[in-house]
Length: 149
Image 1: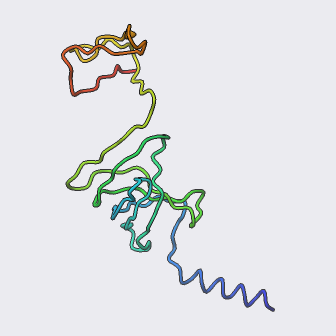
Image 2: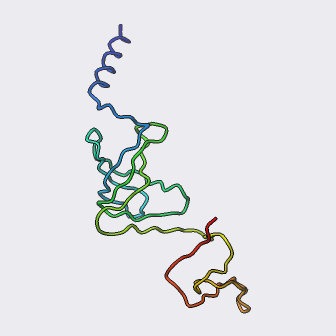
Image 3: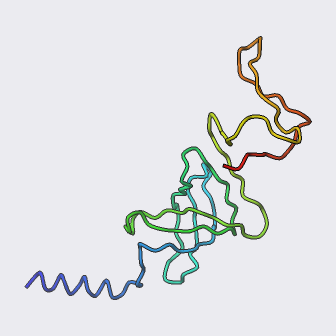
């Protein structure tokens, strides 16, 4: 008897909830980003989802951080479809401030050789005083070039 009453309460509670697919992804507007840049407060576009606070930001590459200003959009999903494991990922620009992306890595390798055209990078050598590897720049450039794979 107790099991039937409990089952009725569970059915009633499920009926009151919005039909949300926790295996799906939903677009959401960024409201605020935490100081350490690892969490977001967002407002999903789907009206069935309430605003969400302190959602972990997962960018897919360890050491990468993004500053995503309010008004930009991210995709919100849930790990393994679990409602208590939300995350935000993938973003696109909103109006205004561009996104700042930081790559905290020891080495960022773009591929190909170290000899590029237009004087951007002409080679590398070892500093005779410090013994550290250095790169020799041609006329310098604000562009980054990489060879197609």
